[in-house]
Image 1 (cartoon, one colour):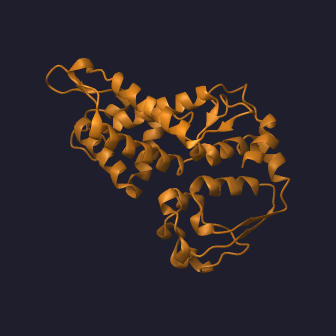
Image 2 (cartoon, one colour):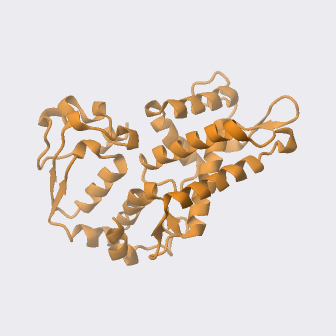
Length: 273
């Protein structure tokens, strides 16, 4: 993956689109160590709590409560980044759309969305006259103070985290495949990379997540042969974003049975369910 960036990064057109997911990235980027990722994440969480519009009326989280929130948010950031191409460059509305798509696969995320919808009139709420607070901002709690939902806090923390990662010049390991997809979506880079492969072999296909699947399809776009091997009974990485068995179909791969060899992979619309 690292070599893919190095070999084809110079072909990406970043200057013409300043909002591109690659516009901030340099060729000499580095993959952040876990310690640095943790430090940047905690800085983002503290900034989010410090920027609370309730000010002194809503004290920053401390102790066990902060540990619980930090653990949950950190895990959720990794969950999201392993299931969409990359969170970089997405508007809050786009992030929310992706979170709603992923909610059935993550109990805590589903709870955050339900809480936000119930309080601010989002999808499924009887209070449909109001837009989601996660887009328009916090709502008065009846005491003249503004209160954030946990979903709002999570989105702000994620945005601050991504912003600080960009400033550091590093890349979160969980963004690595998604950023490769963004690079391969650049026509010149995609054509050059795809033409370098005549045959593509994907082993352990049952543990493929959506960004990985998209990357394979982009690398195959110039007509290379695709050979996939997998066994649904050995799927162990759904917790890291591997596609669930009910998406893959009967026996893991529909009419192809447990082993996939040189056949068309599942339809991408299916994979986004």
